[in-house]
Length: 147
Image 1: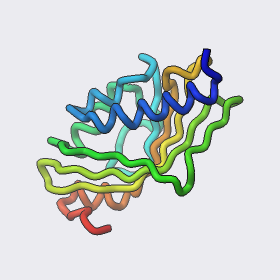
Image 2 (image 1 turned 90 degrees about the horizontal axis):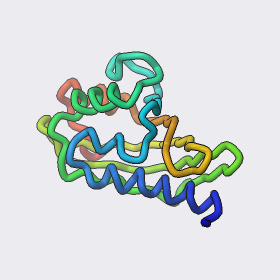
Image 3 (image 1 turned 120 degrees about the vertical axis):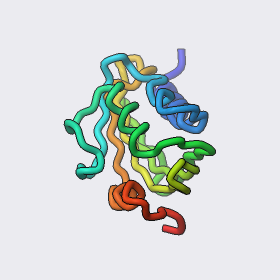
Image 4 (image 1 turned 60 degrees about the vertical axis):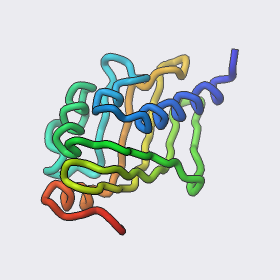
């Protein structure tokens, strides 16, 4: 059996691969426990809802904020490199994402923090730190290109 560090890295890479195979907001559910929670930080009025969102609420949020998302690409960076904490079953990674939506081009920067199940194979808690000003601008009809 693979060591936990390898399993955690593979779970994080699968998270990114799932988002890169975006066919709708439901892809966010792949690789998550049914009762997983997700938090978007920093909190702004654009994200609404409680601080911790169950899976279905995240799907609704994505559907509302980025309607018709297509041609999505999420690319992890090496700066800072992926951080893995085996004791906490936690992975942290920095990424840039971009795609096209019904509202126009969308791009943003992310820091994802994932906490997994004991065996490291499923995400049970996640945080998404995002440039919320860009999200607010986008929702209000302002472009996020060239930022």
